[in-house]
Amino acid sequence: MIRILLADDQTLIRAGFRALLNAEPDMTVVAECGTGRDAVRLAAREHPDVVLMDIRMPDGDGLEATRQIMAGTDLAGTRIIILTTFELDEYIAEAVRAGAAGFLVKDTEPEELLRAVRVVHDGDALLSPSVTRRIMAQLAVQSRAAAQPASLDQITEREREVLRLVGEGLNNAEIAERLFITPLTAKTHVSRIMTKLLVRDRAQLVVLAYESGLVRPGWAG
Image 1 (cartoon, rainbow, N blue to C red):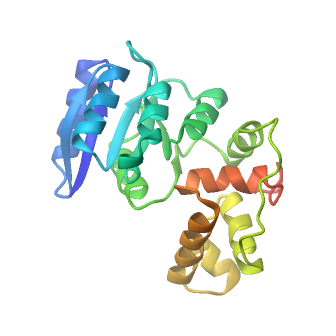
Image 2: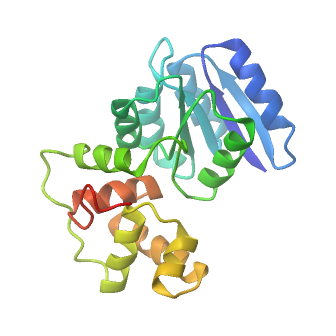
């Protein structure tokens, strides 16, 4: 069962999401709130698997709440999907920097929202279908403009190859096809890279691929 926390200051939106999610046999809404502060408090209390987090909320916005939740060592298994009516590059960039694993606009189709919850719960990164790889490249390049390039000394040449493909936006099945390996092997490579580079999820791995210079803007198709 995927345990979900809803954080949105609009009661009707929360009610709609709650009805949609609770109707699924593998999902349950364990708590809901309308402020950033309450989102942090409830996440610490409930330890949800997935948080659906609005960006614009009173008493601490969704981005700040995301930062605080992701900083909690006891919430390492929690994944956050940012929900907003604004599909702007800077919001996407800030969401990923804050530690979010997904980003969806609120007018996303119900089936896409349900898929997003499952995808993020399984450890993959997810952006709204209309958010292109070009935007992923932008946010990754901007995410640590003043920092030194990330070191990849800890990973093997094969893992570098896998990381490059992750940075281009390929999922495990696509990586497997490109490298003539099984999807399970691709998934294993990705997990090992995350462990070695101390990265908590695939969204952060994409950012790292750009920060390290392994992938550069314009390379992804």
